[in-house]
Length: 374
Ligand SMILES: NC(=O)c1ccc[n+]([C@@H]2O[C@H](COP(=O)([O-])OP(=O)(O)OC[C@H]3O[C@@H](n4cnc5c(N)ncnc54)[C@H](OP(=O)(O)O)[C@@H]3O)[C@@H](O)[C@H]2O)c1
Image 1 (cartoon, helix red, strand yellow):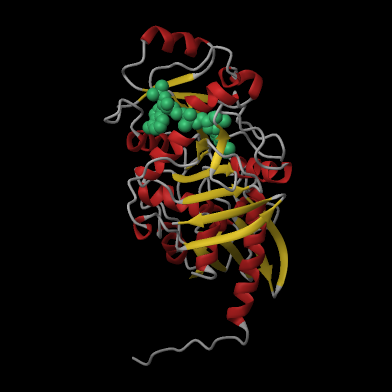
Image 2: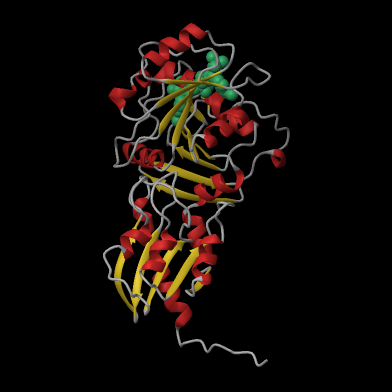
């Protein structure tokens, strides 16, 4: 049998990449609102012209494909749908997007990257192809994957993506010897830190920080949703006056993670205030076991965690090798004796330190932001 060669239309590849880039830009608008769902953008193109577009705006709301295709008539045989992530083919909070694509009679679909969920991956594409739709996969694949790197990590590993964030003086202190730390960084950097909060599903600190700083752990300097506040507190010694114990006033949820050593009575008192108390096993030093904690968070749809300190908690995450990214704001400030950002890691030689292969160094207000990925 003679092989049929399909002749590439001139400029076809770059045209697909160009429209996928537009879909990616649309998808980014959902940042701070859609997680633990992925950000997704979609465009409908007919003869090189965009006739409709959409993106996933908020968790629980319509998918990008529904936004883009919904307002259009059926019989879109001449149209190409560009979508940054494989269309879903299962019932979730909304009906399967593959059904909508078929109902609208879309002739061609271009997909950025396959869905990482092993139960779904490739099925959406297969359903469309079996129904006679021309499907192309992998246009700007790396960019589409990178856009949702926290979602991909959670889906593929069954653990949340972990980012550590702190502000330090030039001599590596996150607080003075008396524990005073507000503020080491300038307002532009704190605003940036709030944006980082809004793109993670949870923000986590140790009970030491709650006792010393009484933080609210909410998103205030930028627009975005409050992440779940997670406090590590092995014996439930969180002070009664702590702001995090008033979730109704703050908005969003507070989860206190403790160990079986905590008194039951105290747990009940805290729950009566609207806080969720979760118990996990303890590590050899009697504190919250971080591996178990992350598995529990992943099961509760926490796809990413921003760990904001203090020193003991930052050290525990690094020592356990559970960190994917570090955001370190360095201020033009010397504090001398004080609380170190990171404590003992048993590093004897410089080449035994944790070196980050990928990083950027940026100006941020009066600080330098060192942003490292493992
Ligand atoms: N500059 C910054 O960016 C920044 C940010 C945050 C905090 N800070 C400063 O940091 C200081 C607080 O730091 P800190 O080191 O004293 O306290 P911390 O790290 O906030 O909290 C430590 C406590 O968390 C509990 N914990 C439970 N499980 C743990 C685990 N697996 N690993 C580590 N801790 C666990 C332990 O208390 P239990 O054993 O009772 O559970 C432990 O004593 C404050 O002065 C604050 O101002 C600065």
